[in-house]
Length: 426
Ligand SMILES: [Fe+2]
Image 1 (cartoon, rainbow, N blue to C red):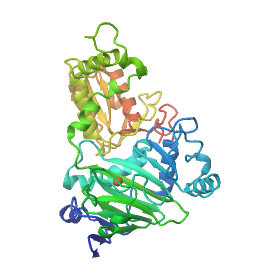
Image 2: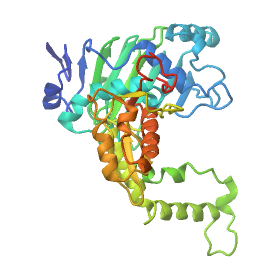
Image 3: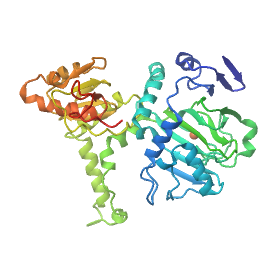
């Protein structure tokens, strides 16, 4: 079924061939009742709870924004989803009671990093699109929107991402303009009533998927019922220079260094010609991470991350590796493992995660050949039928790969459990 209502196309089923040929980067499409969507209400709630786990303190967890009316407090004040709420319904009830009916919004960026099964489903869902239009090198982003706000807090804007909005609850209306509706040089407009005549809308119900290209200006509107709407948006980068991402990625370890004191920039340690300590340290980090010693390893690690993340970086953190993986345990391959020589290390990657190994490449190649997905259940002792000096390095690598969820550890045959091979968390 294809219905075209003005600039909006409405389709009854999602077919990536048709989508890539006719709609990708062209115009908004509303898919009614998408089969096997990657998101379920309960899993999205569990993911939101995980993302807000650090929200019981005084500062907002990374990537989480909570708004009441037009205010965005810096402290969560106990108003983020938590396991005790039990479900989105429980959370909505608590917000209604605590906020006395005031409208609110919850936005969680980097959403897929908090829940491995959800991330896995997104990758599987989008593999069909990537095979037709190419996988985004730097990774698509996932954002949760929950709330009964009258319109998106940011107002009318455009993104540099193509957006796929999965509606999970409530009616979600998006208003679009195919070009910027104002002349002055601002990027967003919150009060947009005078621009309504040149706009058009699309309404998504639970189960629908709404797509719009990066070129469209848009704003999300609520139907003003008290019941919060929930959606998960996938953003696929379309107008972002590769360098915008690659440099921060390359320097990621430097960014994670402890923050310098606020005054460091203003305290040259000696003489006007010396850099302040914070800039001197930053320069040293850039030299180290892009230089001869670490640069090739870091660049190779990034390439392996991109190659194994399925278009959704960063990947969720690894699960704890099993404490032991004896010869009698068994493993089953779930994800392909890729490897490459860095500058100084041999690196292995799966599920968007990278580790170094001391195994020489010929030994590694032999081990990984036995671990291709579909190879079935393999006994650890058989996999480690290697020269004695390589056996423990290979076992260490297998344990890490279980933590990456590239392998599932099954425990010794016949035991039905993992008493010797501790299972990684889901
Ligand atoms: Fe947007």
